Amino acid sequence: MKLIIAALVSLLVGTNAFWIYQAVDSGISTSYRDQNIFELNETATQLALTLTDVGETMPRTEFINIASKHTKFEPFEKDGCIWVGWIGLKFNEEDKLIYVSPEAANQADGLCAPAP
Image (cartoon, rainbow, N blue to C red; front, side):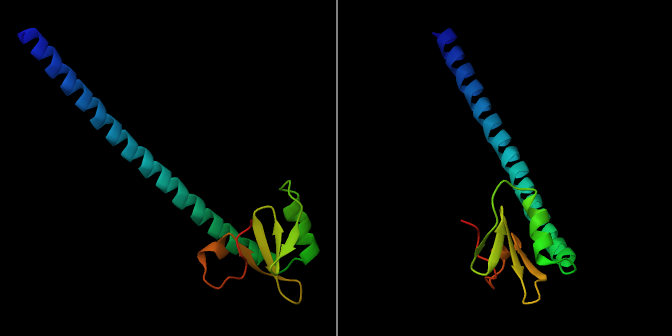
């Protein structure tokens, strides 16, 4: 009888240790995932702002041609933006780039709606 009780207590302690390990491992994995998402969002924002600065000096057609080389999707216009892959490009009347959307998703001004 004592042997059965000792075996059951050992199994209980072992399974509890396993569940504690799983919880800690899940917490660490979630923390790494959240950090990766944060870094990707910051990178997208930085690239969008950089592209806006670079695009101010480049003609619209040339900018769209360059952006099209890096995606398999055809450019299309929707809601005043040219979508090239997952990037929305907003040009002014002089055909100079004024806004790049991934960052638009974080803004309330609604210059470019997110791509479908």
